[in-house]
Amino acid sequence: MAYNIHMIHRPVRKAVIAAAGFGTRFLPQTKAMPKEMLPLVDKPVIQYIVEELVAAGIEDIIIVTGYHKRIIEDHFDHMSSDLRMALKKSGKTELLEQTQRISDLANFVYIRQKGPQGNATPLMNAAHLIGDEPFIYAFADDFFVASPPRFTQMVQAYEQYGGNILCCKQVQRPEEYSQYGIVAGQDVAQGIMKVSTIVEKPGPDNPPSSMASVSAYLLNPQIFEYIDRSVSTHDSSQGEFVQQPIMQAMIDDGVPFYACEIQNAKYYDAGDKLEYLKTIVDFALANKSFGNEFRAYLKNVLQ
Image (cartoon, rainbow, N blue to C red; front, side, top):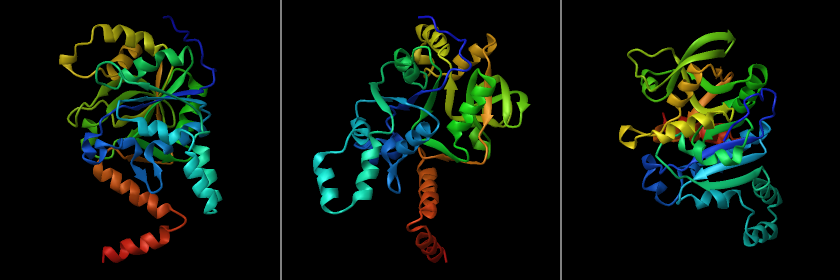
């Protein structure tokens, strides 16, 4: 299948969310409940991702799941008549409206992940639904709280520079060099770098820069051609089927990639136990209903 790459000004309307992982770091909790559905006070993590996508203009959201992720589909489906009637009878009209809006956020499509383990596989699985449009690829357990939101910043960078956009942040701790892809290249504007190198988890000894590619990508469908070629030669005994070497091959062929350092932002990794707990605390403190009471409680506990 051939893909049209001359689409710099095409609107970004579609997104793919990878949500097929087992969530082993949260076992036994994730034995029955997907990690993407872990709550941040009163919303699951994945809903924050979806709401941010919609705010950036995304209309169609493809969620790539596994056999144990039906609860994600149920969450974004219409609520049951029993729940609707219960909320009506109890007079909880605001809560009823909030819950009903969830299913109307976007057009949702669910597909089961098939193929080798690795972050390139969800892209391969969703290719036939993307067609020749640019799209956002995101994960369902890490995100930014930013102003403007990170997907909006990425779309703005895409509209100005075209190409492919990597969501990035500065490395804060040495161990992050072993957790993320690290990019290097030439600065073209404040917070924008034209990428020449992307190295997956290089370690702290000799990283190419301190700019980490995390959480999301805005991609043109040309990447599917490279994925098709790469999967045909992939040897699972050599490791997972990951997208970073695929993107480096595209860069080497002259396909433009830009690192967009998300501004006015805080990064959250809700896929890690400790970081998840930190995220809950921050969200609870920011809650308008009980944030002040929670802050007072924490101060009392920490005395």
